[in-house]
Length: 345
Image (cartoon, rainbow, N blue to C red):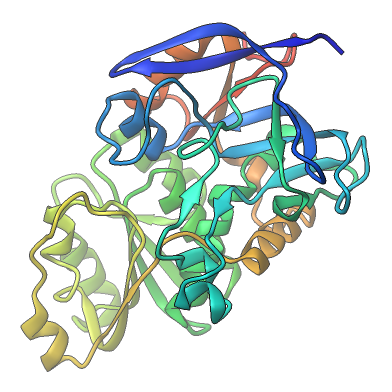
């Protein structure tokens, strides 16, 4: 193994550069992972633009990772095992951690934000965050396990019931994955609203009911629920215009799940929440069992993720990858790969 590796390094607002860095030092008991693919998400975009409150340059970004164990840790998967990464860093001391809820640790961090991540050839990680991927799963699809775990957690937190009419605001990666999981869990219909024509088309091709351009979620749901509204509503958009309509488009005793992360305090019709006795639930990331569940859904091909549009860029083209992720017009998930010959033409 060479003493150096290629890595995409965020060096400051809107600046990312390909650098040769030393292969990471591997702490005692940890593992070294050879990266296959790393997905770009909205958090990475905020880091790139210099607006993330914790990330500091220089930083190797990336927390949606798949790869192979190059050097096994004291415990965990053996060398050569394809894994995905649960990239959460918790303190182990706060009340959330002590009560078994380390995913909402008071001081929660992530690899790729608070420590080096997966936009490189190698990353050093503790074995506890490595999840083996079953044989037969493409490493490219395995990189979707982390965002899929967010959707799995959101649907579990919603306590939706079989036969529910589900509303999803936003047809980005998390919105589509949430819709797929909700349908798999028994939703009778999933209605999606999305401003992007291309993403609306993707949602329609996947078999979801799409709010037509020029109409509203309220109008579309009204026709399907006799004016009652959705049984369960997922806000994956995190936009104030969406927050303003969540209570109005959800039925009495319905469930509202906030999945998209709002950047600032946002107005919500709490009077309607009270009068309809609705449940309002927040979602931050996911638990370790959610990651396991996501991997199972991928291994079973339960969601048809072969139809989930992705595009892979070589590590040397990370700048172009961020442009594609920002525009979001020809893929739902942009991936970066250090593997020769694995980028899309």
